[in-house]
Image (cartoon, rainbow, N blue to C red; front, side):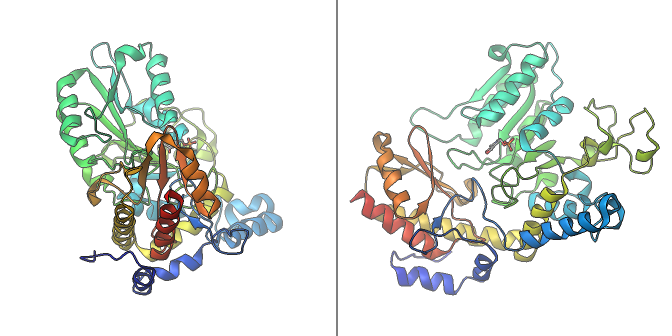
Length: 423
Ligand SMILES: Cc1ncc(COP(=O)(O)O)c(C=O)c1O
Protein backbone atom coordinates (compact mmCIF):
# COMPACT_ATOMS: atom_id res chain seq x y z
CA UNK A 1 0.00 0.00 0.00
CA UNK A 2 1.41 3.45 -0.79
CA UNK A 3 2.57 5.36 2.27
CA UNK A 4 0.42 8.29 1.22
CA UNK A 5 -2.54 8.63 -1.06
CA UNK A 6 -3.40 11.85 -2.84
CA UNK A 7 -6.93 13.05 -3.52
CA UNK A 8 -6.20 14.27 -7.04
CA UNK A 9 -7.37 12.78 -10.33
CA UNK A 10 -3.81 12.52 -11.74
CA UNK A 11 -2.83 10.45 -8.69
CA UNK A 12 -5.78 8.07 -9.29
CA UNK A 13 -4.78 7.81 -12.95
CA UNK A 14 -1.20 7.05 -11.95
CA UNK A 15 -2.42 4.28 -9.63
CA UNK A 16 -4.44 2.83 -12.50
CA UNK A 17 -1.48 3.04 -14.87
CA UNK A 18 0.63 1.07 -12.39
CA UNK A 19 -2.06 -1.50 -11.68
CA UNK A 20 -1.00 -4.93 -12.94
CA UNK A 21 -4.66 -6.01 -13.07
CA UNK A 22 -5.97 -2.98 -15.00
CA UNK A 23 -6.67 -4.94 -18.20
CA UNK A 24 -9.27 -7.10 -16.42
CA UNK A 25 -11.76 -4.20 -16.56
CA UNK A 26 -11.95 -4.72 -20.33
CA UNK A 27 -13.17 -8.25 -19.78
CA UNK A 28 -16.46 -6.92 -18.35
CA UNK A 29 -19.38 -4.95 -19.73
CA UNK A 30 -19.63 -1.71 -17.78
CA UNK A 31 -23.18 -0.25 -17.97
CA UNK A 32 -23.42 3.23 -19.52
CA UNK A 33 -25.02 6.46 -18.37
CA UNK A 34 -27.40 8.28 -20.70
CA UNK A 35 -24.47 10.54 -21.73
CA UNK A 36 -22.57 7.48 -22.97
CA UNK A 37 -20.03 7.45 -20.15
CA UNK A 38 -19.45 4.38 -17.99
CA UNK A 39 -21.45 4.39 -14.80
CA UNK A 40 -19.45 4.31 -11.59
CA UNK A 41 -20.44 0.80 -10.68
CA UNK A 42 -19.93 0.14 -6.98
CA UNK A 43 -22.41 -2.68 -6.45
CA UNK A 44 -20.40 -5.77 -7.25
CA UNK A 45 -21.37 -6.79 -3.70
CA UNK A 46 -24.93 -7.07 -4.94
CA UNK A 47 -24.63 -8.17 -8.57
CA UNK A 48 -21.29 -8.60 -10.29
CA UNK A 49 -20.92 -7.32 -13.85
CA UNK A 50 -21.15 -9.52 -16.92
CA UNK A 51 -17.91 -11.01 -18.21
CA UNK A 52 -17.79 -10.44 -21.98
CA UNK A 53 -17.03 -14.14 -22.43
CA UNK A 54 -20.31 -15.28 -20.84
CA UNK A 55 -22.22 -15.16 -24.10
CA UNK A 56 -19.83 -17.55 -25.88
CA UNK A 57 -19.90 -19.97 -22.92
CA UNK A 58 -23.71 -20.09 -23.09
CA UNK A 59 -23.72 -20.23 -26.88
CA UNK A 60 -21.52 -23.32 -26.76
CA UNK A 61 -24.17 -25.09 -24.69
CA UNK A 62 -27.01 -23.81 -26.87
CA UNK A 63 -25.17 -25.10 -29.94
CA UNK A 64 -24.57 -28.50 -28.37
CA UNK A 65 -28.20 -28.74 -27.32
CA UNK A 66 -29.27 -27.69 -30.84
CA UNK A 67 -27.10 -30.24 -32.61
CA UNK A 68 -26.94 -33.10 -30.12
CA UNK A 69 -30.15 -33.01 -28.09
CA UNK A 70 -29.98 -35.45 -25.21
CA UNK A 71 -26.65 -36.79 -26.42
CA UNK A 72 -25.08 -33.58 -25.20
CA UNK A 73 -24.94 -35.17 -21.77
CA UNK A 74 -22.03 -37.24 -23.06
CA UNK A 75 -21.02 -35.76 -26.42
CA UNK A 76 -21.15 -31.99 -25.86
CA UNK A 77 -17.81 -30.21 -26.03
CA UNK A 78 -18.13 -29.99 -22.24
CA UNK A 79 -20.35 -33.02 -21.53
CA UNK A 80 -23.27 -32.01 -19.33
CA UNK A 81 -23.16 -35.12 -17.15
CA UNK A 82 -19.94 -34.11 -15.39
CA UNK A 83 -20.13 -30.36 -16.29
CA UNK A 84 -20.22 -29.21 -12.66
CA UNK A 85 -16.90 -30.97 -12.05
CA UNK A 86 -15.26 -28.44 -14.39
CA UNK A 87 -15.89 -25.78 -11.74
CA UNK A 88 -14.95 -27.67 -8.60
CA UNK A 89 -11.24 -27.00 -8.43
CA UNK A 90 -11.46 -23.33 -9.41
CA UNK A 91 -14.27 -22.71 -6.95
CA UNK A 92 -12.31 -24.52 -4.27
CA UNK A 93 -9.35 -22.20 -4.87
CA UNK A 94 -11.54 -19.13 -4.34
CA UNK A 95 -12.61 -20.32 -0.88
CA UNK A 96 -9.49 -22.24 0.18
CA UNK A 97 -11.02 -25.69 -0.14
CA UNK A 98 -9.96 -29.07 -1.52
CA UNK A 99 -11.95 -30.41 -4.51
CA UNK A 100 -13.59 -33.08 -2.36
CA UNK A 101 -14.91 -30.30 -0.12
CA UNK A 102 -16.49 -28.21 -2.86
CA UNK A 103 -19.54 -28.41 -5.04
CA UNK A 104 -21.54 -25.93 -7.08
CA UNK A 105 -25.30 -26.45 -6.76
CA UNK A 106 -28.70 -24.84 -6.08
CA UNK A 107 -28.88 -21.37 -4.58
CA UNK A 108 -27.59 -20.03 -1.31
CA UNK A 109 -30.54 -20.30 1.07
CA UNK A 110 -31.35 -23.75 -0.30
CA UNK A 111 -27.79 -24.85 0.43
CA UNK A 112 -27.90 -23.40 3.94
CA UNK A 113 -31.00 -25.47 4.64
CA UNK A 114 -29.54 -28.64 3.15
CA UNK A 115 -26.40 -28.22 5.22
CA UNK A 116 -28.35 -27.49 8.39
CA UNK A 117 -30.29 -30.71 7.84
CA UNK A 118 -26.95 -32.46 8.33
CA UNK A 119 -25.17 -30.13 10.71
CA UNK A 120 -27.88 -28.75 12.98
CA UNK A 121 -28.87 -31.74 15.07
CA UNK A 122 -30.33 -30.20 18.22
CA UNK A 123 -30.86 -32.15 21.43
CA UNK A 124 -32.71 -31.15 24.60
CA UNK A 125 -29.39 -29.97 26.05
CA UNK A 126 -27.60 -28.66 22.97
CA UNK A 127 -30.04 -26.83 20.74
CA UNK A 128 -28.92 -23.21 20.38
CA UNK A 129 -27.76 -21.45 17.23
CA UNK A 130 -25.55 -18.36 17.32
CA UNK A 131 -25.95 -15.82 14.53
CA UNK A 132 -25.03 -12.15 14.25
CA UNK A 133 -27.83 -9.73 15.18
CA UNK A 134 -28.95 -8.19 11.91
CA UNK A 135 -27.82 -11.18 9.88
CA UNK A 136 -29.14 -11.14 6.33
CA UNK A 137 -32.90 -11.77 6.58
CA UNK A 138 -32.83 -15.00 4.58
CA UNK A 139 -30.37 -16.44 7.10
CA UNK A 140 -32.55 -15.33 10.00
CA UNK A 141 -35.59 -16.98 8.40
CA UNK A 142 -33.65 -20.13 7.53
CA UNK A 143 -32.22 -20.51 11.02
CA UNK A 144 -35.53 -19.67 12.72
CA UNK A 145 -37.42 -22.16 10.59
CA UNK A 146 -34.84 -24.89 11.32
CA UNK A 147 -35.23 -24.29 15.05
CA UNK A 148 -39.01 -24.53 14.76
CA UNK A 149 -38.78 -27.54 12.46
CA UNK A 150 -36.98 -29.40 15.23
CA UNK A 151 -39.68 -28.44 17.72
CA UNK A 152 -37.70 -25.78 19.59
CA UNK A 153 -38.58 -22.20 20.33
CA UNK A 154 -36.70 -19.35 18.65
CA UNK A 155 -36.74 -17.35 21.91
CA UNK A 156 -34.93 -20.19 23.72
CA UNK A 157 -32.69 -21.42 20.95
CA UNK A 158 -31.44 -18.38 19.04
CA UNK A 159 -28.54 -16.28 20.32
CA UNK A 160 -27.88 -13.05 18.43
CA UNK A 161 -24.47 -11.44 18.74
CA UNK A 162 -24.82 -7.70 19.25
CA UNK A 163 -22.07 -5.09 19.14
CA UNK A 164 -21.17 -3.17 22.29
CA UNK A 165 -23.21 -0.06 22.94
CA UNK A 166 -22.25 2.78 20.57
CA UNK A 167 -20.33 0.35 18.36
CA UNK A 168 -21.46 -1.03 15.01
CA UNK A 169 -19.17 -4.03 14.58
CA UNK A 170 -18.59 -7.14 16.67
CA UNK A 171 -15.35 -7.75 18.54
CA UNK A 172 -13.85 -11.19 18.12
CA UNK A 173 -13.19 -11.49 21.85
CA UNK A 174 -16.88 -10.81 22.56
CA UNK A 175 -17.92 -13.48 20.06
CA UNK A 176 -15.52 -15.92 21.75
CA UNK A 177 -16.90 -14.96 25.15
CA UNK A 178 -20.51 -15.60 24.13
CA UNK A 179 -19.52 -18.96 22.66
CA UNK A 180 -17.65 -19.95 25.84
CA UNK A 181 -20.41 -18.71 28.15
CA UNK A 182 -23.12 -20.70 26.38
CA UNK A 183 -20.86 -23.75 26.11
CA UNK A 184 -22.57 -27.07 25.59
CA UNK A 185 -25.98 -25.53 24.94
CA UNK A 186 -24.75 -24.41 21.51
CA UNK A 187 -25.38 -26.76 18.60
CA UNK A 188 -24.40 -24.47 15.73
CA UNK A 189 -22.58 -21.20 15.09
CA UNK A 190 -23.62 -19.74 11.72
CA UNK A 191 -22.23 -16.34 10.82
CA UNK A 192 -21.74 -14.40 7.62
CA UNK A 193 -18.05 -14.39 6.65
CA UNK A 194 -18.49 -10.71 5.82
CA UNK A 195 -21.56 -8.98 7.24
CA UNK A 196 -23.68 -7.68 4.37
CA UNK A 197 -24.59 -4.46 6.17
CA UNK A 198 -21.46 -3.31 7.98
CA UNK A 199 -18.94 -4.94 5.63
CA UNK A 200 -17.13 -6.39 8.66
CA UNK A 201 -15.14 -9.56 7.92
CA UNK A 202 -15.14 -11.91 10.87
CA UNK A 203 -12.14 -13.80 12.16
CA UNK A 204 -13.36 -17.16 10.93
CA UNK A 205 -10.31 -19.03 12.17
CA UNK A 206 -10.73 -17.86 15.76
CA UNK A 207 -14.52 -18.29 15.74
CA UNK A 208 -14.16 -21.85 14.43
CA UNK A 209 -11.59 -22.65 17.13
CA UNK A 210 -13.87 -21.23 19.81
CA UNK A 211 -16.74 -23.34 18.45
CA UNK A 212 -14.69 -26.51 18.62
CA UNK A 213 -13.64 -25.90 22.17
CA UNK A 214 -17.27 -26.22 23.22
CA UNK A 215 -18.16 -29.00 20.78
CA UNK A 216 -20.35 -26.95 18.44
CA UNK A 217 -20.57 -27.15 14.66
CA UNK A 218 -19.35 -24.03 12.81
CA UNK A 219 -20.67 -22.88 9.45
CA UNK A 220 -20.44 -19.66 7.44
CA UNK A 221 -22.58 -17.85 4.89
CA UNK A 222 -19.98 -16.52 2.49
CA UNK A 223 -22.26 -14.52 0.20
CA UNK A 224 -20.18 -11.38 0.80
CA UNK A 225 -16.87 -13.14 1.30
CA UNK A 226 -16.43 -15.52 -1.66
CA UNK A 227 -14.36 -13.81 -4.33
CA UNK A 228 -13.90 -10.80 -2.03
CA UNK A 229 -11.49 -11.79 0.75
CA UNK A 230 -8.90 -14.49 1.22
CA UNK A 231 -10.56 -17.63 2.59
CA UNK A 232 -8.98 -20.80 3.97
CA UNK A 233 -11.97 -22.91 4.82
CA UNK A 234 -10.00 -26.16 4.89
CA UNK A 235 -7.16 -24.86 7.03
CA UNK A 236 -9.51 -23.09 9.41
CA UNK A 237 -11.38 -26.37 9.93
CA UNK A 238 -14.76 -24.85 9.17
CA UNK A 239 -17.47 -27.58 9.12
CA UNK A 240 -19.56 -26.20 6.29
CA UNK A 241 -20.19 -23.08 4.25
CA UNK A 242 -22.43 -21.85 1.45
CA UNK A 243 -22.28 -18.83 -0.81
CA UNK A 244 -23.96 -17.32 -3.84
CA UNK A 245 -22.05 -16.54 -7.01
CA UNK A 246 -23.92 -13.57 -8.43
CA UNK A 247 -22.07 -10.99 -6.31
CA UNK A 248 -18.27 -11.02 -6.43
CA UNK A 249 -18.27 -14.16 -8.58
CA UNK A 250 -20.16 -12.51 -11.47
CA UNK A 251 -22.34 -15.46 -12.50
CA UNK A 252 -25.39 -13.32 -13.27
CA UNK A 253 -28.74 -12.83 -11.54
CA UNK A 254 -29.83 -15.88 -9.57
CA UNK A 255 -26.61 -17.70 -10.49
CA UNK A 256 -25.78 -21.12 -9.10
CA UNK A 257 -24.39 -21.27 -5.55
CA UNK A 258 -21.39 -22.87 -3.87
CA UNK A 259 -21.15 -25.28 -1.01
CA UNK A 260 -18.32 -26.49 1.24
CA UNK A 261 -18.24 -29.51 3.54
CA UNK A 262 -14.96 -30.13 5.34
CA UNK A 263 -13.03 -33.19 4.22
CA UNK A 264 -13.34 -34.77 7.66
CA UNK A 265 -17.06 -35.23 6.99
CA UNK A 266 -16.50 -36.60 3.48
CA UNK A 267 -17.04 -40.23 4.42
CA UNK A 268 -19.39 -39.70 7.31
CA UNK A 269 -22.36 -41.37 5.67
CA UNK A 270 -24.18 -41.54 9.00
CA UNK A 271 -24.83 -37.80 8.84
CA UNK A 272 -28.51 -37.42 8.09
CA UNK A 273 -29.07 -35.62 4.81
CA UNK A 274 -31.78 -34.94 2.30
CA UNK A 275 -30.95 -37.08 -0.71
CA UNK A 276 -31.44 -36.80 -4.45
CA UNK A 277 -30.13 -38.80 -7.37
CA UNK A 278 -27.33 -36.40 -8.23
CA UNK A 279 -25.75 -37.03 -4.83
CA UNK A 280 -25.76 -40.78 -5.49
CA UNK A 281 -22.59 -42.69 -6.31
CA UNK A 282 -21.74 -41.88 -9.95
CA UNK A 283 -20.84 -45.46 -10.86
CA UNK A 284 -24.25 -46.83 -9.96
CA UNK A 285 -26.50 -43.79 -10.39
CA UNK A 286 -28.06 -45.04 -13.59
CA UNK A 287 -28.80 -48.49 -12.25
CA UNK A 288 -31.75 -46.66 -10.69
CA UNK A 289 -31.66 -48.77 -7.52
CA UNK A 290 -33.80 -47.68 -4.55
CA UNK A 291 -30.97 -47.58 -1.98
CA UNK A 292 -29.20 -44.18 -1.78
CA UNK A 293 -25.39 -44.41 -1.79
CA UNK A 294 -23.91 -40.92 -1.34
CA UNK A 295 -20.86 -39.72 -3.24
CA UNK A 296 -17.93 -39.01 -0.91
CA UNK A 297 -17.49 -35.35 -0.03
CA UNK A 298 -19.52 -32.25 -0.82
CA UNK A 299 -20.91 -33.72 -4.05
CA UNK A 300 -22.90 -36.14 -1.92
CA UNK A 301 -25.16 -33.25 -0.90
CA UNK A 302 -26.36 -32.62 -4.47
CA UNK A 303 -30.00 -33.33 -5.23
CA UNK A 304 -30.73 -32.55 -8.86
CA UNK A 305 -28.88 -32.51 -12.14
CA UNK A 306 -27.59 -28.94 -12.34
CA UNK A 307 -28.63 -26.08 -14.70
CA UNK A 308 -25.94 -26.12 -17.38
CA UNK A 309 -26.48 -22.51 -18.51
CA UNK A 310 -25.93 -21.31 -14.96
CA UNK A 311 -22.81 -23.42 -14.66
CA UNK A 312 -21.59 -21.96 -17.96
CA UNK A 313 -21.89 -18.34 -16.81
CA UNK A 314 -20.08 -19.12 -13.58
CA UNK A 315 -17.38 -21.02 -15.44
CA UNK A 316 -16.75 -17.94 -17.61
CA UNK A 317 -16.15 -15.89 -14.50
CA UNK A 318 -14.09 -18.51 -12.67
CA UNK A 319 -11.75 -18.68 -15.67
CA UNK A 320 -11.16 -14.95 -15.18
CA UNK A 321 -10.52 -15.46 -11.46
CA UNK A 322 -8.04 -18.20 -12.30
CA UNK A 323 -6.19 -15.83 -14.63
CA UNK A 324 -6.16 -12.92 -12.18
CA UNK A 325 -5.38 -14.97 -9.04
CA UNK A 326 -7.22 -14.46 -5.77
CA UNK A 327 -4.05 -13.29 -4.02
CA UNK A 328 -3.45 -10.52 -6.59
CA UNK A 329 -7.08 -9.47 -6.42
CA UNK A 330 -6.99 -9.19 -2.64
CA UNK A 331 -3.76 -7.19 -2.84
CA UNK A 332 -5.34 -4.68 -5.22
CA UNK A 333 -8.57 -4.65 -3.25
CA UNK A 334 -6.79 -3.54 -0.10
CA UNK A 335 -5.22 -0.61 -1.99
CA UNK A 336 -8.43 0.34 -3.78
CA UNK A 337 -10.65 0.30 -0.70
CA UNK A 338 -7.87 1.97 1.29
CA UNK A 339 -7.96 4.75 -1.29
CA UNK A 340 -11.73 5.04 -1.01
CA UNK A 341 -11.48 5.29 2.78
CA UNK A 342 -8.79 7.95 2.45
CA UNK A 343 -10.90 10.02 0.06
CA UNK A 344 -13.98 9.79 2.29
CA UNK A 345 -11.86 11.10 5.16
CA UNK A 346 -10.71 13.99 2.95
CA UNK A 347 -14.32 15.12 2.53
CA UNK A 348 -14.34 16.13 6.21
CA UNK A 349 -18.11 16.14 6.55
CA UNK A 350 -19.71 15.07 9.79
CA UNK A 351 -22.89 14.02 7.98
CA UNK A 352 -21.18 10.86 6.78
CA UNK A 353 -19.19 8.23 8.64
CA UNK A 354 -17.81 4.83 7.66
CA UNK A 355 -19.07 2.01 9.87
CA UNK A 356 -16.92 -0.69 8.26
CA UNK A 357 -13.75 -1.49 10.24
CA UNK A 358 -10.74 0.44 9.13
CA UNK A 359 -8.43 -2.56 9.63
CA UNK A 360 -7.96 -4.23 6.21
CA UNK A 361 -8.01 -7.66 7.92
CA UNK A 362 -11.53 -6.99 9.11
CA UNK A 363 -13.14 -6.06 5.84
CA UNK A 364 -13.23 -6.81 2.12
CA UNK A 365 -13.76 -4.23 -0.58
CA UNK A 366 -17.08 -2.86 0.73
CA UNK A 367 -17.37 0.29 2.81
CA UNK A 368 -20.69 1.09 4.45
CA UNK A 369 -21.24 4.81 4.78
CA UNK A 370 -23.68 5.89 7.46
CA UNK A 371 -25.66 9.01 6.54
CA UNK A 372 -26.69 11.30 9.37
CA UNK A 373 -30.45 11.60 9.92
CA UNK A 374 -30.90 8.85 7.32
CA UNK A 375 -31.10 11.43 4.58
CA UNK A 376 -31.84 9.39 1.44
CA UNK A 377 -31.62 12.51 -0.72
CA UNK A 378 -27.86 12.17 -0.69
CA UNK A 379 -28.15 8.70 -2.18
CA UNK A 380 -30.58 9.97 -4.80
CA UNK A 381 -28.22 12.81 -5.68
CA UNK A 382 -25.18 10.58 -6.23
CA UNK A 383 -27.32 8.15 -8.25
CA UNK A 384 -28.35 11.01 -10.54
CA UNK A 385 -24.66 11.69 -11.16
CA UNK A 386 -24.00 8.19 -12.49
CA UNK A 387 -23.04 6.32 -9.31
CA UNK A 388 -24.54 2.87 -8.87
CA UNK A 389 -24.35 2.18 -5.15
CA UNK A 390 -27.01 0.87 -2.83
CA UNK A 391 -29.05 2.19 0.02
CA UNK A 392 -29.73 -0.09 2.96
CA UNK A 393 -32.34 0.94 5.48
CA UNK A 394 -32.24 2.69 7.80
CA UNK A 395 -29.25 4.90 6.96
CA UNK A 396 -26.44 3.26 5.01
CA UNK A 397 -24.98 3.64 1.52
CA UNK A 398 -22.90 0.61 0.62
CA UNK A 399 -20.11 0.98 -1.92
CA UNK A 400 -17.85 -1.82 -3.05
CA UNK A 401 -15.01 -1.13 -5.49
CA UNK A 402 -14.27 -4.53 -6.99
CA UNK A 403 -10.63 -5.12 -7.95
CA UNK A 404 -11.51 -7.03 -11.15
CA UNK A 405 -13.25 -4.15 -12.86
CA UNK A 406 -13.18 -1.01 -10.72
CA UNK A 407 -10.40 1.52 -11.05
CA UNK A 408 -8.81 4.11 -8.80
CA UNK A 409 -10.36 6.67 -11.16
CA UNK A 410 -13.82 5.23 -10.38
CA UNK A 411 -13.19 5.66 -6.69
CA UNK A 412 -11.86 9.18 -7.19
CA UNK A 413 -14.89 10.18 -9.29
CA UNK A 414 -17.25 8.72 -6.70
CA UNK A 415 -15.62 10.70 -3.89
CA UNK A 416 -15.79 13.90 -5.96
CA UNK A 417 -19.48 13.36 -6.69
CA UNK A 418 -20.22 12.61 -3.03
CA UNK A 419 -18.34 15.71 -1.96
CA UNK A 420 -20.19 17.90 -4.47
CA UNK A 421 -23.55 16.45 -3.48
CA UNK A 422 -22.82 17.09 0.20
CA UNK A 423 -21.86 20.65 -0.66
C1 LIG B 1 -25.62 -12.77 3.30
C2 LIG B 1 -26.68 -13.30 2.41
N1 LIG B 1 -27.29 -14.45 2.75
C3 LIG B 1 -28.28 -14.97 1.98
C4 LIG B 1 -28.68 -14.33 0.82
C5 LIG B 1 -29.80 -14.94 0.03
O1 LIG B 1 -29.34 -15.47 -1.15
P1 LIG B 1 -30.24 -16.37 -2.13
O2 LIG B 1 -31.39 -15.54 -2.56
O3 LIG B 1 -29.32 -16.66 -3.26
O4 LIG B 1 -30.65 -17.58 -1.37
C6 LIG B 1 -28.05 -13.15 0.43
C7 LIG B 1 -28.47 -12.45 -0.81
O5 LIG B 1 -28.05 -11.40 -1.15
C8 LIG B 1 -27.04 -12.62 1.26
O6 LIG B 1 -26.43 -11.47 0.94
